[in-house]
Length: 149
Image 1: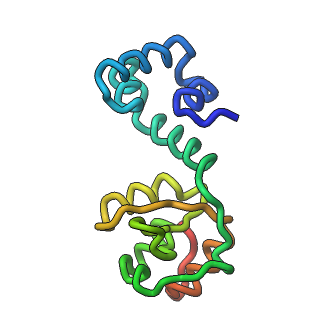
Image 2: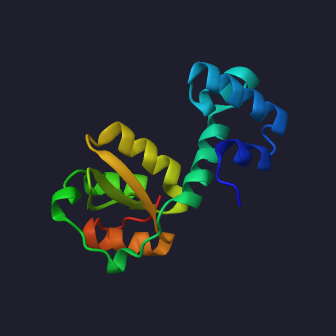
């Protein structure tokens, strides 16, 4: 199973192999990000690039069970209850210089976007099952009547 962004876009039928080669050549020449070049050269919609990135990231990142993780209360204060539920993200702990944040595959792109805009620290997203995320959100960010986004 390939995990390069171009391969994901080909498998989704967004680009063909020749277009990926052209994007890679242009990337080698300019240093621009692959997705930006796809948008510029082939009018690929940013949502398609973002969805492909999410699929690629999900294949590469670690999977956890929130029930067995050690949570650091210091990172939990980085977001509030509403944000945790709205964006389906759960700060877990520091992992080196990055904050490990758990989410589920369905929320990956939205949680990533939220973390980039909101958190002042670098983030490392990990995945868990959606029902395990909801259980952990109820435990660590209790919000009466809250349901997963």
